[in-house]
Image 1 (cartoon, rainbow, N blue to C red):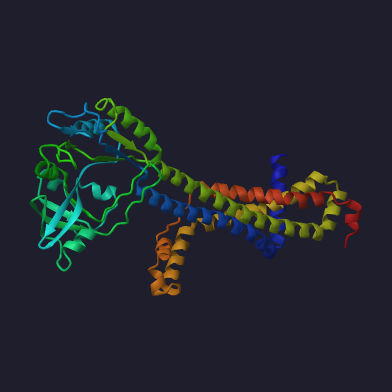
Image 2 (tube, helix red, strand yellow):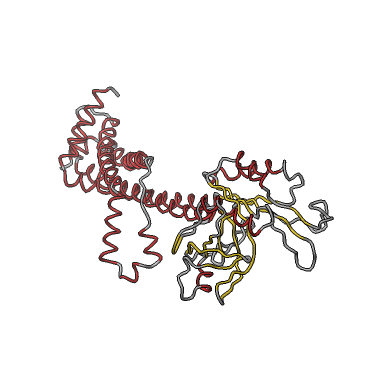
Length: 450
């Protein structure tokens, strides 16, 4: 088709559409709201998906956990059989090698010891965790009072401690824990902070073990290793025997940038540790496979659901266009007969009606894209309305309300051309039948139409 003919066809289509402004506007509404709903639902879905995947990531989907494992009792080759000290697990050399080798955004070695803590007449069996300041962010802990451990506390090996919520509740039923002094391992520690209650992490499949955070006391790692431990290790008599165990680190948690980096980094860690642990029996590399699969499944589910909604919305708009164009064919039967009598071919009639359909769908698509871009602002208005005029004070504090209020729609850039392309495709598909029906009209019968 020549450029002049194309220009003439489009111009004629615009003129026909503008002859009936109200009808054309109502016809476009189906496409407008179809495209708007596609972009809006994708934006809301993107926000919800990001929120859901963020919660999955908070469970540790990008964490690789390297743990010390006590070797079988009959493995006398590990440790010194004369001194009856069983030495195993992760060492400072392992830490140095991994720090040099692995690309990470979080690296936290810890040492855990079960012991009793006392304050006045109150005592409690707890887990003493020697850690660095990064531990609080890595495990998504928050503070109810005071401060967490600092780099300065760790460097200077200060006798300071942060107590978890259950520990604070039992040791300090009436006092403010911050500033109090507790006895831990025969030494005095000043409490500088209290963590909020945190839901225990459940064991997931075979990859992650359950972990409890509310019965812990956190002290600087260097303090634990120098004042509770003997040198760099901690030795204790095992139950029922005189065998002593010596471990530097119980666990090193490594956070990588994205879930896609987890498997590759885990393989690098395994190969790296083979140089210092040739038999590979006193450590394990734990990868959160179930969490990674869950993150991928969540994204796939959102895409399927929103794709279905998008298809239904545009089909409804397309049906509206088809209905109007069929009515237009009936209304313009005499016009079609005149044009055929003057020499217009069937292809000319088909092209003319398709051009009108595409003009309607393209115009509606552009308006819908404009409305779709306003989705984040419209959602903020809806949240304000719901918060101030719909939800009761009790409902406003519910879990659903918190989930809804915490959701922030994000308009994906790719959704704009995709939604507009769908609007054009919908107009084209649903405009073919009316256009072909107009082209197949008998010219003589059409001229007789009143």
